[in-house]
Amino acid sequence: MRILTTGGTGFIGSHTTVELQNAGFDVVIADNLSNSNEQVLDRIEKITGKRPAFIKADLSCPKECKQVFDTYKDIEGVINFAAYKAVGESVEKPIMYYQNNLGIFLNLVENMKNNGVKYFVQSSSCTVYGEPDSLPIKETSPVKKATSPYGHTKQIVEEMLSFITASTDIKAIALRYFNPIGAHESALIGELPNGVPNNLLPFVTQTAAGIRKELKVFGNDYPTPDGTCIRDYIHVVDLAKAHVVAVKRLLENKNKENLEFFNIGTGKGFSVLEIINSFEKTTGVKLPWSFAPRREGDIIQIWADTKYAEEELGWKAQETLDTMTLSSWKWQQALDK
Ligand code: WQD
Image (cartoon, rainbow, N blue to C red; front, side, top):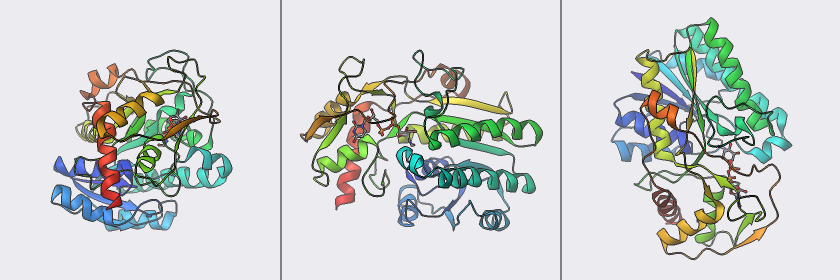
C-alpha cells in the first residue's frame, strides 16, 4: 500500500511520512526541496528504520508530475502538502501562489484520474474561515472571503475538489489545520523556516537560541482576556496522525461523502502571552520580548470545535501545550548543534 506525500520533506509532510511508515504504509515523497532538504530522508529513516522512496519534482510542471506516477505505479492514495504557504509573501506575489498551489493540485488530480488513483487528502487550513462570527468554529461554519492569495488557494482547491469528486472516482478529505507547532520527540525533524520566520513558534525558539534579538508581540489591544491574539495550537505529531486516520478512512471506503472536511485542532485557544509563558515554564529560558503594533491581516481569535473529527474520525489531539513548546525548543537546540 503506497502513499504519495507531496511536499513530504516539509514540516508537516515529514511528520506525516513518519506516522504513515509507523502504520505500515510504503511512502514515496515527491518534493522540489524549495523549502526543505534531502537530509530529512535520513532523519525519517533514523526514526522509523525505513527510508521513504523519494523523487525530486516540481509538481507544478505537468511533465514532472506525470513522471512521478509513471515511476511509481503502486500509488493508492495521495496526501498533498506541496504548496507555498507564507501569507505575507502571497499578498506580494499572488500570481506565483496561484500558479504553484493550484497548478500542483490540478496536475495531481489529472494524474490520479489517468492512473486510477482514487484517494486524496488535502492539506487545508482554518484560514478559510477568516474571522469567526462565533466560537468554537465548526466545519459547517461559513467560509469567508479570503484575505490573502494563500488562503484563497486553500479555498479554491476545496471548491474544485467538490466538483472533481462528484464526477470522477476520486474521493477526498480536506483537513483544515489550525496552528501546527512542536516537533517529533526525537528532535530529528521539525519546523525549519527559510529566512526570518513568519510564524510565532520558530521566532520564539530562534529568539531563545539568540539567533533573533527579541520577539515582537504583534498587538496588545485586541478584545481578548490579555489583549493578544488567540489561536488553536496543535502538536504537529497529532496533526500527522490525523492524516493516517483520514487516508485509512478513504482506503477502507468509510467516507460518507465524496468530499469531507474536518477541523484538525485541539479545541482549546491560547494567546500569544500564554505561549510565551508555557515556553518559559517548560524550557526555563527567559524570552526577551516586547509589544509591537498589530500585524496586518491577523484575525483576533479562532479555535476549533473538534466534536466532528472525534466522532467521525475517532481522532483527538493528545499532546498538551507544554509538550508542544518544549518539543519545539528541543528541536531548535538540536538544530544549533
Ligand atoms: C500566530 C500568532 C501573530 C509571529 C498562519 C497562517 C496559517 C498557517 C499558520 C501555514 C498571531 C502572533 C506571530 C511573531 C507574534 N500557515 N505573532 N509575533 O498567522 O495564526 O497562521 O500560519 O500553514 O494559514 O495564516 O500563525 O504563527 O504567524 O501567528 O506576535 O513574531 O502569533 O500575531 O497572533 P497565524 P502565526
